Amino acid sequence: MKLTKQDLLERADRVYDAIVVGGGAGGLSAGIYLQRYLVSSLIIDKGKARSFWMQELHNYLGLPPDTPGRSLLRQGREHYLSLSGDMLDGFVEEIVDKGETFAVTVKIGRQDSIEQTFHARYLIAASGIIDYLPNLDSMRNVYDYAGYNLHVCLICDGYEMADKKVGVFASTASNAEVLFPLGWFTPHITLFTQGLFEIGDGLRQKLQEQGYQIVETPILQFLGEDHLMSGVELEDGRVIELEAGLISMGSKYHTEYLKTFNLEIQDGNLVTDKMARTSHPRIFAIGDLKVGLNQVVVAAADGALAATQIWRDLRRSQPRSHHSQLT
Ligand SMILES: Cc1cc2nc3c(=O)[nH]c(=O)nc-3n(C[C@H](O)[C@H](O)[C@H](O)COP(=O)(O)OP(=O)(O)OC[C@H]3O[C@@H](n4cnc5c(N)ncnc54)[C@H](O)[C@@H]3O)c2cc1C
Image 1 (tube, rainbow, N blue to C red):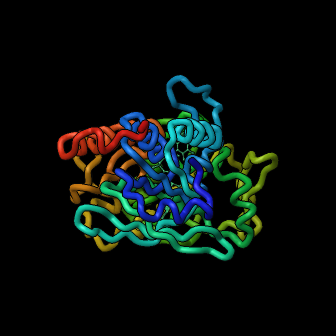
Image 2: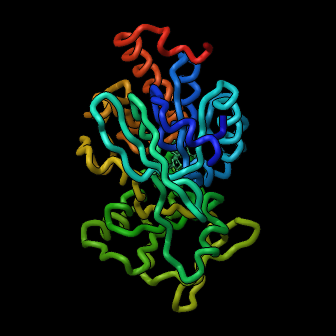
C-alpha cells in the first residue's frame, strides 16, 4: 500500500525482506518481481526519476515509441501496489548495517518533515543518476527543451538526431568525446565548450579532420518554441541554427546513503556480479547506478535479476512459511 504518515508507526517494527531505494524503472521492476516471489518489500522514492524526464521512450519492446516516462512510472507503481507492495514517498538519508538487517533512515515530507527508520534484510540500490545541464541564467530556458530535442543520451536518441544539425554541449574534453559515436548518426556536428575547458591540439585536430565545428563562446540562451530547440544565441550576439542538441556534461550519482559501505566502484558506477549483487553480500545495485548501459530495458532486467537472487538467498536460508505475504 501507499504509506502515509499515519501508517508509519505500524511499519516501524516490521522487518521487510527487501527495501528498494528508488522507484524508477529499475526499482519498480524489482518491486514487482519481489512481490510476485512473496518476498516482502518497501520501495522508497523521492520522485523526479530520470525516467520522469524522459518525454518519449523510443526503444522499449512492446510499448508505443512515444510512450512518456511518466506513463511507465504510473503504470509500474499501480502494478506494484496491486501486488500489495509498500511504497513510500521519501528521501533515504542513511543506512546502517546491523548485521542481519539494515536500518534505513528516511526523511518524509518537504514541510514539517519527519524522520523514520525502517528495517530490511536486503537492500536494492535503485536510486539512479541525474544529468548535469548547461548552467544558464534562466534554467527555465534549459528545461523548456531538455528531454525533447535537446537530448542527454546518445544510446537513446542517436537515431532521433540522424542527419540533423546537432550541437554537442560538453563540460570537459572527455565528455566531448561523445561527438565521435554521434558521427555515426550525423556529420553535421558543432561542439559548444562554453569556455568551460580547453581543447587540446590532438582533439582539435581530430575534430577538424571530421569537419566538425567548434564554438567556445558561452551561450546566452536556447532558441525555439513548443519545446523544439532551433538553435542557440551566444553571449556575443551570434545565433547558430541547430535541429537538435546533445548534452554531455556528466551526471550526479545518487549514492550518498551508501558512502559508509565502501562498495566497489568503477568510474563512479557500482560494480555488481551478473545477478546485480554488489561487493556487499546483502546490497544489490540496479539501473543507471551500476556499471552497464543506462537504459530502461536494462534497469528493468536488473530489477528482475536482483529480486530473483534475493528470493534464492531467502529460500536457502529460511523456510517459506516465514515469508508468505498471503497469510
Ligand atoms: C531525457 C531522457 C531520455 C531518455 N530516453 C530513454 C529512451 O528513449 N530509452 C531508454 O531506454 N532510456 C532512456 N533514458 C534513460 C532512462 O531514463 C534510464 O536509464 C532509466 O530511467 C534508469 O532507471 P533507474 O531505475 O536506474 O533510475 P531512475 O529512473 O532515475 O529512478 C531512480 C529513482 O530513485 C530516486 N532516488 C534517488 N536518490 C534517492 C534517495 N536517496 N531516496 C529515495 N529515492 C531516491 C530518484 O529520485 C528516482 O525517482 C532517458 C533518460 C533521460 C534523462
